[in-house]
Length: 144
Image (cartoon, rainbow, N blue to C red):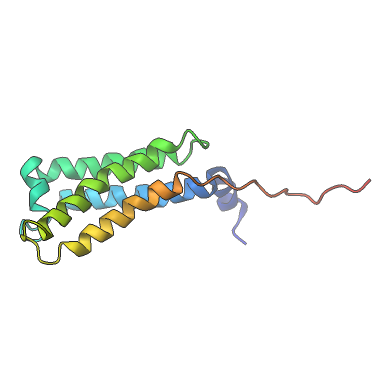
């Protein structure tokens, strides 16, 4: 059993908050990685890079991640912007890779990152509809 210092914040976060914390951390770190070690133009989403430079996309990922991390601490249903932010930044990447694979034919394996980014974002649309389970009572019920 984790110590009280870990249990308390986890209880405050709940399952939705823990989910948003993970998604937000991954999104922010992905954005950061694009700033410090950018994608090679040949392997990246060339269609997206025609619209905006990679550093703008990187900051969009970081912003979505930070939004999710902040929203993780909000109670349901006020946490919804975090789910939408992660989905909103992944959707263009999924579509960009999909278009690079077909119909453009620029990226022969573009279907794989399209599925990965699509699933990473789509799971947020599923999780946004989940209710936080009721908290278990910390003490047994009293008998009369």
